[in-house]
Length: 332
Image (cartoon, rainbow, N blue to C red):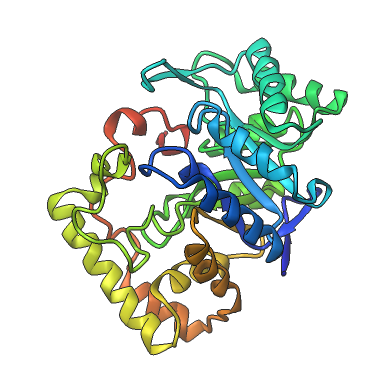
């Protein structure tokens, strides 16, 4: 397995990470046994970065990973956890809480659910508009000093917030959406990360399956948030599927799958970028792992970008209420 480094002074991780959210929430029902088998297959293949959040299935995902860790080599793995998203008993989203006391409480609960004595990378899921980032990072730094957290990450924040956070404590990575059809970080956020020595762990590299080559109309069922996602609606969906088909034609000519081309494109944007794939089945994982064997030439990259030009996607990546919560989407 090829490795990359999380930031200037961060740990080495596999060049591909496994995002575990879909094993518990938001993509419809998941199969527990298949999820556990996929986790094992990922680690057997050399994946060392497992990403979760304490609000994925409201604790379910952490407990699932905790179960898997009973038979996996914990000392060889890097567990990344997001915290701070608040949910009601009905699953509704209530906002974010990144006050220092809340940070430490959330960490304590995650350690218990995961069954571990430390979290490798701990990060707020979103910027809490009511708490200065310096206070949140300060609390995280205390957890690092106490040994409960090894490294501090951030998620979906903008350049100014990155600078303020990094002035308090080193930040190893920024987790943010980045794909052929979500390229907003290239203007300011990615250059700032590189200036500060912060890696990118890129989620949504297949835009939640939209540009995987496998998405079919009407596929999103009950419990699948894509049923409401703007890019999966009406004319937006038709336009975006046309982009996926164009990408598929380029991929086929080069002997790879659509998904592999999309993942490989993200990986090719820099050695400081680690794609996270949301595979929740072994067949999906196998296809994603194949992207690591895809070496894209300058000609290949140009052909891919001609098929899916920057800014060509139709629709926002989240509904309006969620877009408003993204510090990364704020424009001066």
